[in-house]
Every structure is written in structure tokens, then in C-alpha cells.
Image 1 (cartoon, rainbow, N blue to C red):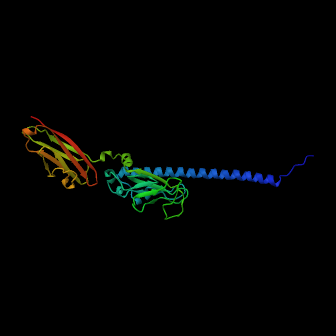
Image 2 (cartoon, rainbow, N blue to C red):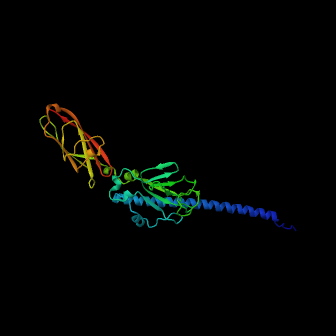
Image 3 (cartoon, rainbow, N blue to C red):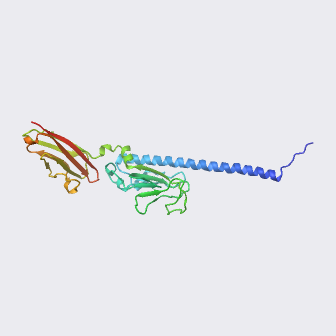
Length: 289
């Protein structure tokens, strides 16, 4: 009768080593899959939060305050159970500032790349639960971060250790957000009312106004016609701010037009508001017989 042979110690050791390699490899694969799943989960949450903020901006033409963000995003933890940080451009939290702004002070410095004019940033500290992104000391509006995977730790108020950078950052630019909520119609424009046609011996009269309310407007104009304005704002003198005069609307007129005025004349209108927006409009005034 054939007798069964027992495993030797060497054979048992080899089996245990193989089992250990399989288990270790499986654990590593599982950990990688779990981390990737949480990154995806966090990114999707941040996308939903960004959409919520954009919806608020569409309704109120401003960004939510930090308190309003807390109310809007009651479940705003990332895949590792940590809070998703909301960093808005402060000026855009004021009424009507969003569509009227052309630039922001909020920028993101990622390695050597600088992304300017951001409306807001959403930030997760990633799998290592160590926030590695900070605002620069020189300019409190520039968010500094490293390239993904680079050894870094800019933010020293939590765990202070250099390790592969894995913060998850989502940003929205001012111009992208303005386009998203349909701000194009809010850009400063010069509109005109009725214009009395110029004829020799007659008069020229026209009224101009802006497409914006609740802002302070400044006007000036240039023309080779001898025009007067109501209110009396005077003519533009280059970029001299003193030649720009405040007025809610502008009326230009010539009480008389003579033979020497016959022909086409160029009228240049310039308008700016107290939010830094500026626009211009050129009109040809035809003086005929």
C-alpha cells in the first residue's frame, strides 16, 4: 500500500511565501482601487457643489457667502470624510458684482503655471488627509500648490510633513462663470435714443444712455463738430480722468450747423462705470444740404 508523503518545511515555506505574495498583491490592488474610487467620488461631489454654486450665482448674480455655502452644501465631505473647502473671490459675494466685474484678485499658482481671474475654488485634502495647499504670504489671494505627485507641504496648520501632493482642486474662472450664467448682456454698452438728423441751417440733437443701472457712470466725447452737452461734461483729453464727468445719461446738440460743416463727421463716445468697466461707440454724423 502506497504511503502519502508529508510536506517538508521548505515546501511549506514556499507555499506560505506564494500565499503571502498573492494576499499582499491583492491588498495593494484593493487599496489602489479604493483610493481611485474615493478620488472619483470626491471629484463628483465637487462637481455637484460647483453646479450648486453656479445655480446660486444664476439666481442672485453674486457668489454665496461662506455661511450661505454651509447651508447650500450640508453634505460636503470628500471621499475620506473631510470637509471640502470653498474659497470665493470676496468681491464677487457683493450684490451685482459678478456680471459687472472684469477681473478678480483670486489666482492659483500650480508649480510654474498661474491661472488668473478665478471666481471660486473648491479644495479637498485628498487621500493623505493632509492639506498641502496654502495662500502665499506675499499675496493673500494667490493659492499655491504643487504638481500632482510632487513632494510638498505648503500648508503647515495641520499635519506638517512633505509627501506626494494629492490635494484635489476644482476651480471656476470669472469669465467661464459669467458665460455659464449668461452675463454677456450685462456688459457695459452705450445705447441711443432719438436722433434729430443734421441739415445745414438746422440742428443736431441726440441722447445717449447706458444699459446698466445702480452704477455710477462717467462720460466724455470727441468730435470735430462744435457740439455742446447736457450736462456739460466737456471733451475727452486722452486718458485724463478729470475729463470724464459723472452723468446718468448724455445729450449732445448743436444749435446751428453751417455750410462749412457739410459732410460726414466722426463722433466718439466714451463711457466707464465705477466698477472698472469701460466701453466706447463711434457714430458718423452726416451734415447734408
